[in-house]
Amino acid sequence: MSFLEFYGLKGQPFSNAPDNRFYFNFEQHAQALLRLKYAVDSMKGLAVLIGDIGTGKTTLARRMLDELPEEQYESALLIIIHSSVTSEWLLKKISVQLGVKDVADTKVEILGQLYQRLMEIHAEGRKAVVLIDEAQMLNSRDLMEEFRGLLNIENTDGKLLSFVFFGMPRLNDCLALDPPLQQRVAVKYKTRSLDAQQTADYIRHRLDVVGCERDLFTQDAYTAIQEYSRGIPRLINTICDNALFEGFLIKKEMIDADLIDEIAKDLDLVQKPLGMLRADDREVDQIIEQIGRKAHG
Image (cartoon, rainbow, N blue to C red):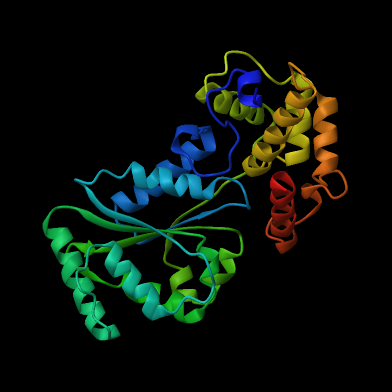
């Protein structure tokens, strides 16, 4: 018997892999999407969502992409996975994502192709939108200047291309590399971690998605999870996943705060609470990476 069978679950409820089934539409996410959609619908040019590590930025980016109807938008999601991106690579990638065929090799030619494609999209009565996830990796003045140049592409009706940046607080430093671009941020929103009630609702929602028909955590356990995770969804998932597995091993029908305390110790959350660190501190990244290794080790 697996822990899924033991707890009557039809799937993994606390995986950190992106999965739209588990999207939890609490108020701040709804407010974020409302503002970002307004920015692209009115072709404001550049919108920015800032969030601490593990607070659901990628989930929001994917959700937004799914909610932009194809008959109204030519939209794409570009995920930046390293910081060695060049302006040429970026320009080619954006062009491909927006449907440019046989992308040229020179920058001048690519810009010409992209302009023609944007005019085609506009003629179809649609809007071109590129979502950039992990945008804080674009830590280069050249790249910020490239975005500024792309935002200058327009016709008599206005801008032909909009961008939405999703990134950690360090994204503010990237934007500051090019003050004219920074001044063009038309909409900006910052996500926050979950409070105690939202944490409990989030956990119950994920369990409900996989067919759970009862509470698996005591109220004290919910409180402990929120305190140790500081309301960061990625850490909530890791704590809960470990708790269910350990609970299964000792045949515990309901997870209580004592077990959460033990899990937190194993994950080193007791020794250095995340709340004592700056949200944009690289040390937070390292701690979460270490937790991930412990959870899968």
